[in-house]
Length: 344
Image (cartoon, rainbow, N blue to C red; front, side, top):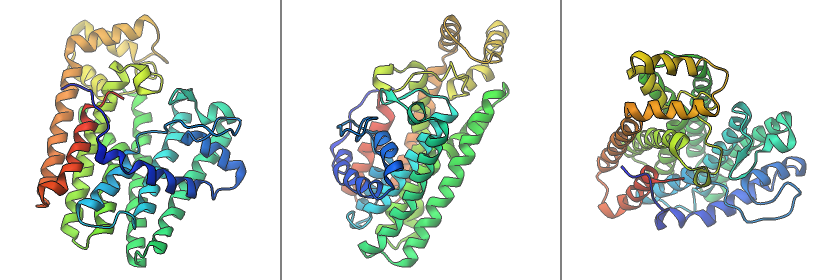
């Protein structure tokens, strides 16, 4: 598997309307919070001056809209829901940067580095709240109260799973006996839950077929696991210029899939060295190089790439099980392929 790719046109076509919806929601925030949120989104610099920087790939919002489109729904009606999942994702990023002590995101200082941890927590909380205010805007688009309540439940459950997954991710930093099964359970919650919410929300708001919604939920879940594994690969072997943040998963002793695989399958001196290195408070300099050499000898990257492909094909199987026309499935398949082969 080659981790390369470019954003498909079906994916990028929704970026402009989603960005416009996000701006409306974010700009409704009180000014003292708005500045931090607009900075995080890449719309202004730390001094409040407008700038045109990309603030992510808008993956979750695109999946929501493409899923709605696939089931024959009106994507303009569900734009607030697409904004909501993107806001939840960005709330998690602001808090994640604090928890990981990350200094940069998208080649710029993180919110907490500029405004401090306490204010960054406030910013993240504001982003979280705005997501639910965005969902309420579905009423203005003609969505029924019943559907809005259902959407709120779906997103709330995903948020709870996301928080649990983040807890596990941090907790595993202090354990050397984390298994691949443990890792996959964490990935389902930390990443796949919001992917599943994005695809199922789009299908739910665009269709009345509950079986169809379930297929889309499973498609998003499996795709989210594949995405997280690819992220783990980039976190070790990716180029910082492409990823847009410090490639520091080893430095932070994160138990990403390649490392878990290495700890679980290595033996002798390699296992002894890995356990010793991951018992340190941080891994720096030549120690990082040694970890990578051990993982390379064990074939950890190849294992991770193969597992990501397995989940990718599981995702496609759920999409095909919907029975929708090939033409309706095509944009989602193109997006899934990009997410598997991306290099950023």
